[in-house]
Length: 327
Image (tube, rainbow, N blue to C red; front, side, top):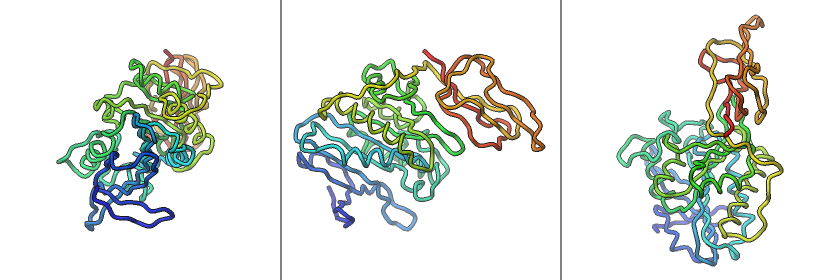
């Protein structure tokens, strides 16, 4: 590895290549990975934490903030490395607390060219700004994983339940999903340009954790995310302990979709996240600027509320709620 050091509270090594073989067993290392260069010719660094166990084994990767406003995953990854004893670890854990550095610093969801990084994976080596960033991240870092847990949240103006997206037809990812003790699991084969999909194409078992809401830290969601990852580490034989069982079984959904408004106005979405709704139930109402009700929206079929809009001002075609259809 081409290395320099930066002095923070602990020494951090800057690298242009991530070589896990050069890390000694029993070491916990921090890196700044030089992924791309900005408009001034200065490095754009991605933070990486690596815990290499004293016994060889699989490599679990954890990523957060692929969208710059999705923050709950950051402390989940930070705390995993504080809670795992590397001297008793089998295999290697790699954490990237923030993938989308430029957007995190700007407090924006999308990349600096307006693209959604999680819709263009695995990118292109000779593409535009966002495509090159995505390609280098996938091929220089993610490619080294055997398993991937990608942490997300809802977007602006929306809230989420604690739920998982996974290909439930694949036994490895099914087990990964069930271990998270989530409220809801959505069967979602990854074919939509996501980081999870890019990982699966490389033979890496991957799931997406949706842990709450954007632009803030939520203690309960962070705690739930930690529990699920600890369960996974135990299941993979990387750490020792007892798997924590869920208080109630997750709701398994065979599919899900968003409902949208067909007129603009002030929107009030009635059900709470994770609430069960029945076909025909009033799920939202929309009002004009004078406070008169324009119309009600009804559930098109039985389902569970995965997420919903909390932004009152809703133009025609705006999101209402994310409805999961139980398997």
